[in-house]
Each structure stands twice: as C-alpha cells, then as structure tokens.
Length: 125
Image (tube, rainbow, N blue to C red; front, top):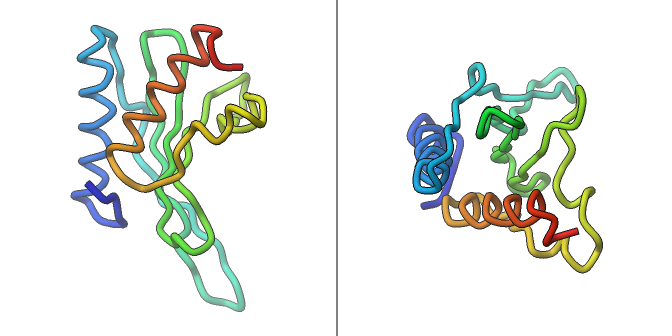
C-alpha cells in the first residue's frame, strides 16, 4: 500500500509496524503522537514529513518518517542512539546502505524493519 499524507496512511504505518513485531513475538508500542514536520520558506508553511516513534522489544526506539513532499524527501527508518535519531544508511557500509528502501509503501516498511533486525543481529554492518 502506498503511504501518503492522510490519516489512513498513518494508521497503515502503525498497523504495518505492529504486525511485523507481533509476528516476531516482540512488543512494539507507539511512543507519543505522530508529528508532521514543517518548514517556512518565503513566509509559506510547507509540510515535509510525517514521523512516528516506536519503542521496540523494551530495548530500543525507532522512528519512521514518511515524506509528504516526495520530490525532496524519502521514507526513512531511524534508530535512536543516545538523544539522536540516526538514519540507517549512516550506520552501515556503502554496500549495505542500498539494502534499505526509501519507498513510501507498507512493503518497504516491512523490508526496512527486516534489514534493521539484520543490522542489530550484527549481520549487516
């Protein structure tokens, strides 16, 4: 399913992430509300990305961002390290960064969560 800037897509993102971790037998809880990040250019407000944070397996936080402006932004999975959320392609080698998808679909979300599992298991560095 294509994810867009609408409540149905926000619910689909939640459902996709919840289903992925429920199938693995791991708890995954939304942490706070999803937010739409904006910027102001020439006095106009532009919506850029919808972001939602999740607490996974009582161990780590992830943030998933779905772009609103798909010409300038891409869907991205972030891992919390200290107080910062770091995009996954910063944490892996150049050969492995292309394994993460930047598509705004539920299929890409599931794929990226599987790649995160590989990274956390030490198989994707």
